[in-house]
Image (cartoon, rainbow, N blue to C red; front, top):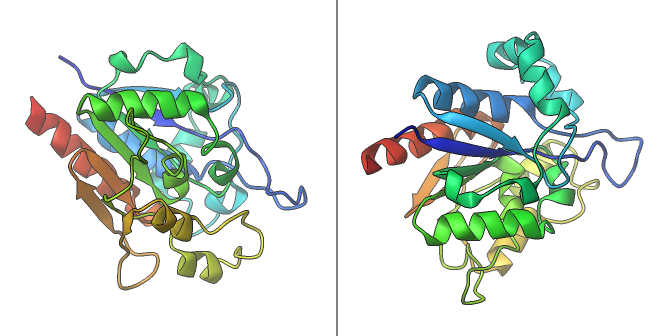
Length: 231
């Protein structure tokens, strides 16, 4: 049976300061989409509010703007997917084998508080299917609890965009919170690469997380390998 992936994207277009735009970090979607597509997986986009998805301007410039991102923007069919995403209430978690949270600083605002995304994530995780995130996508896992009330990430080895990387990206004064610290506060066994901005991904059971934009391909490959090994 064909595996199905639910890709989570943001609806937010700016930081608290409206003069600083943000949005989906496109390559975090396109790198993973490419991997999943090559494995023949079916894919759906969902966002906290449904509807349109803004793009992070910095992700559309060198060196972040690579051939997969350029190909997506040049494809009207692909761009149309970002104009009209599903909302959580449109999604039956039973239809999916994995959920993959993309990043961009925008997700810090609308991923954590989405009860609909939390429901989908909890249902997928508790039946043993895969929950994955890359970069800031782990913000979508910070407040997700399991049926017993514990945090999904408590006691789990995981990674995500590091505070050091926020500082180096010069957005540490703009972001609404320290996601790395918040994950640790939830009991996550947070890990990161020795060097910033290099590909790094962690598997703990059916939780797969990647540290930064450069980790999207590795994260998606690990998800695909787990799905294929499950038969």
